[in-house]
Length: 162
Image (cartoon, rainbow, N blue to C red; front, side, top):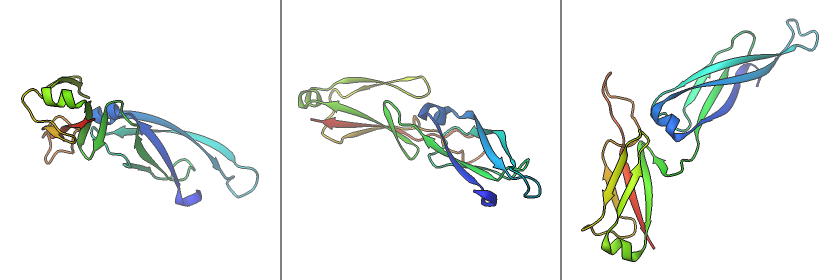
């Protein structure tokens, strides 16, 4: 550590990465005594991190030296979600079907991260293993091209036929 600083992981859920969130992280470091004499002291500081909507795994939040503490960088880790797997700005939802369900068609209800419900029907569609249906603009928020713009990735429903 020392003057080059510290790197610490921190995590949020996919839901928090979708909406954005504020994290408060307490860090305790050993601060040497002023003139190298004596044991020094342990000093704590709480860092506040604003995780922007759509933040990606590996996003870095850096803080310079302060109050005798070395610089620190926090690295975002996004916990696995129960239903979705993130792929860039898209959210992938896997639906496993039997051969019979794939040939006859099914109705699937998918809860989205913004609280809506996506209802999908495969009736009359040819569904095979790895068939994908894409729903534009329902995935993770993206950094807008210009202020005030809203842009999202897609939800991809991937079928697995067994």
